[in-house]
Image (cartoon, rainbow, N blue to C red; front, side, top):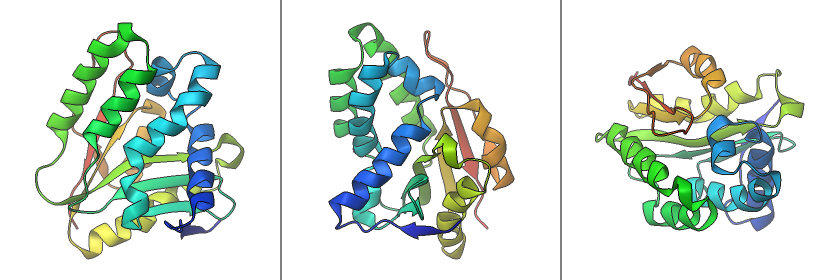
Length: 194
C-alpha cells in the first residue's frame, strides 16, 4: 500500500481525497453527532472537510492512498486552520440547537493548540473497505518524517476514541479531553519533537 502527495492543482485529485474522507468518517462519533441524518452527512461533510483541512492542499501537505482508500490533510508550521471558514460552514449546516455546544468545542480545541511551531494533522481517515492494511499508519508517517526532519512537535485532535491507539503507536499522547454538552468527547494529542 503506497501513499503519495495529492496534486494541489488538480481539482479531481482533491475531490478524490475528500471522497475518501467522507467514507472514512461515516461512523465517526463527533461527525455523526454534527450530522446524524445520512442525507445531511453526505451533503455537508465534504464542505466541512474542505473548510477544516483545505489549507493542506495549498501547502502541498495532503496525502492519499494509491487508490484513494484514505487521505490525510496536514498543516506544516506557519499554516493554520481557517477559523472563519470552519465556523461559516458549521453554523450553516448543523442544527441550531447544537450551535452553542459547537462554539464551546471550537474554543476548547483552540486552547489546546500548541503556540510553538508544529505540524497539525487536521484530518486523516481510511475507508472501511481499505482498513487493516497499514494505510492509516502510512498516512501518518509521511508527514511525521518531515515533522522529525524539522525537529517539530506534532498535534491532532482525535474525534474517535477507537483511533487513539494508532496515534499512540506513532508517538502521540493524549493531553486532554474536551467534553461539551451532549457531544461526544474530542481528545487533543501531542507528539514531542524528535
